Length: 445
Ligand code: GLU
Image (tube, rainbow, N blue to C red; front, side, top):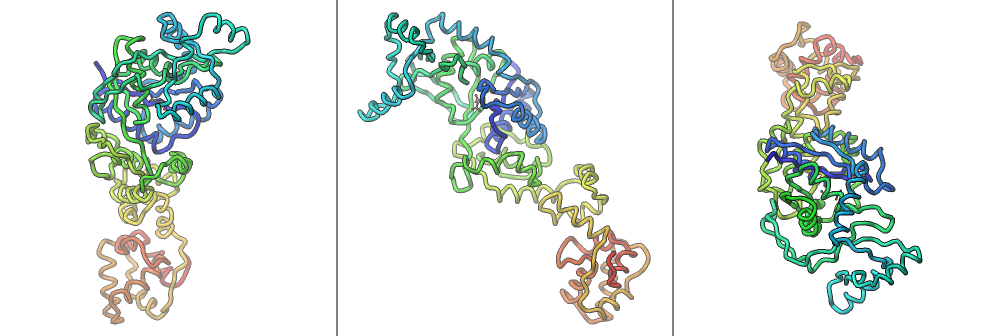
């Protein structure tokens, strides 16, 4: 049986780092097993779902390189869900309930007050036909609950190992709202069945849902997928991320100039027993992926770690991988330029500054004119090679007696207008004799 995994976001907001960790694990699992990855848009909530958010999801995943093989929208499958609802009603597994939210809240409080778990008491199941007819006559539309089979439900979880849940400790879940809209659970079962999803990998917050869903899979289909529930993501100090999710959206991290592979590398490795390392390609990440390494403790997301990983990724990035993007940014350098400046980049956009240092115009910073004039006399006019910097500074040292910082810093300032930066040996070659001489004369060049 070929593996099919899925990522099922609701288009009610932009994707954030927590979502992408789930997407990545599913995507890598599918790729690692030669399987397929389904992108499912969970848009049954027609009031909160928008096309713009759906487009955002597709854009963000494409930017990260998490391509899908299959695609579907729940909003196009209401007829399918209606058929499943009918099937469950026919089997007596859905029952109408008429309690208001206030009544339900009161029941909860009473139960908690008596020290009991707040489990729905199935009062609606005991309504007489006459009582039901009375609600209907008064225009009260029911919501519908799924009648759980009170039993132990167990599965072998990809992350947690053996899990077993006593469904007698759960409330019969509401599957259909009073306005007739199916909630997430039932469509989810229909889709996972119809699209042949073999592995459902999602956050730990779904563990209880899974117990319910295992019963629904058995009722509506002939197989139950394999499940994996990864711990949720927290901030670096273990705090919840919910308040910061806006700034942790993929859209804003992309706008901040982070590399897609820095995000992929970090999100694939935090919360696992593997080290966080920069990976240049998704293929490399997939090759090293093993779901057994996903840990049972939370994945801690630290923006500082992302920034650090971004730098490490750029420092090793081959020229061919960035060539087109440098062109787009108006950076005209070649492989020598890239290899010279990449150790100094935190973000790719920083290359623009160094391109300007190389190609000009740069207003030189000269404090000691006599020293720079001497140095200028000693600088050859012919094209520079890899040894030019060494030969030139040796000559300047001999002529002036300066050494170390006193020798090198004024030359760097005159040639680049900056006190630090990439290796001067390469920068000198890139700047070239004409611009270098002009800058040493104090001209903006
Ligand atoms: N739309 C659901 C959610 O985002 C999908 C959960 C699942 O993977 O089944 O929570």
